[in-house]
Image (cartoon, rainbow, N blue to C red; front, side, top):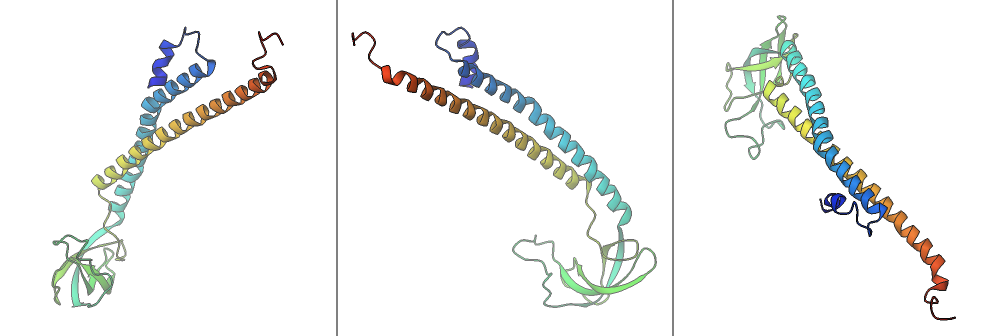
Length: 201
């Protein structure tokens, strides 16, 4: 911000260097891009992600179905049991052997994870399957899809802002390097005669 404010103070300053104004203009352009282009990029990416995720929600709702399964027996010592330290207390899961019928009428039988605290033979629970009765994950819900889209847009905004600021820093760094190079060249030319003017030598 100090560099940007210098645009006004330095515009007629006889001590200003061309690179001072160039650096100030680079900072101003970068700031405007961060304020305008970065949010715009975030909105575009977020909107695209929202459309894609909501389409995925609709596709999953069409292709996945809830069916009722019946417990045959409980399976003990399964590695897929819920971790009591990371799962909510109400989200108790058990590994069971169950029977169910797919939406197309296909009879299915196999091990599944049931949201039952103490499953017993004959207990019923709900499963998500495809049209042929194969077990599928719960379909993505609209709220979760929207959350993911918002995060994608926010991430795109931060990434764009970082790229803009990084580009500005690179430009300023190159300007400074060129300035130092010109100073070195000027010093090399003036060095042999330094201090001789006015000495009568």
